[in-house]
Image (tube, rainbow, N blue to C red; front, side):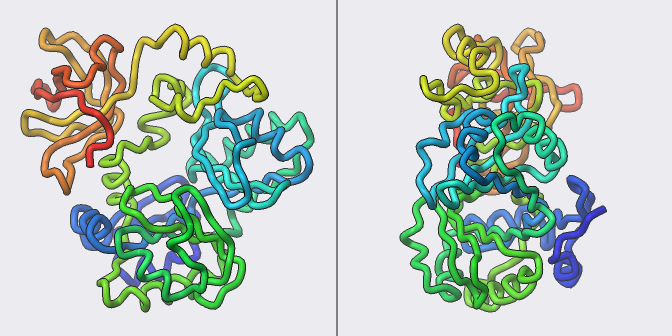
Length: 360
């Protein structure tokens, strides 16, 4: 099992460590619900150094990205990022990712930790245009400082005006006395905040300075458990749960990152365009529990006559809303907002309702 550069600090904070994506990672410190509320109401710090980073460089960098991702990277200017996905040649998704335009001929792709090896092989296998690829995943650490007070904490440590970095934009500058830190406003919690990318050797120093700066806000470390409940409240997809090699971006409600422009030819373009035009048989939708109960990944979704109409992909008890919420793929005829559905929880049929995302 791999360890991030911050592993010893997690032990110091008495984190509960679990295996995740080949790493020993903190799932919680003080409790998932408490950590969740900490981020929603103040500020918390996630170690997400297990994520993967690929550099794509050279005159063919954009051509490569346009081929292997669904979104239109030609619209990016330096300092902007976009959410995208790798289609798998069969209508499914290899992974979802972030694309950062770092320089005119230099991009950074940020991929999911569990998929680093798979994504790297996929990128190399489909690099028919001659882009220069570098897997920098083992060299880079990443911290996510999230919550409404995050900007107040971080601004103490940099001369970069953080309020001038819009959502899905980034800059590179000095942070906590360390040069060339990428400061990115692309959070996965919906609570506001920033991600910091740095070389591994600077991770501990930056972590400690962030915690010193955040003392007045009772800043706290946050585990992957609360990261999951926070993203679910915002309706953000999790690879391996809500999207995978068997689900298409159109089915997953990711048509907004699937761009069918004339100048962009990408893997599965024809398949996905047909789905967009003709419709799909299943759709990823959010639902809230009407009856008391907690939906979980893999639970069956049924109609009032007990016919299976879908499957839960993500579910939890919302620490903010105080009731069960979830997402799942539903037969299209049951996907309309307000439709009554039922979740099979330990052989009980509990009523739920299809709702518009996000939940909060």
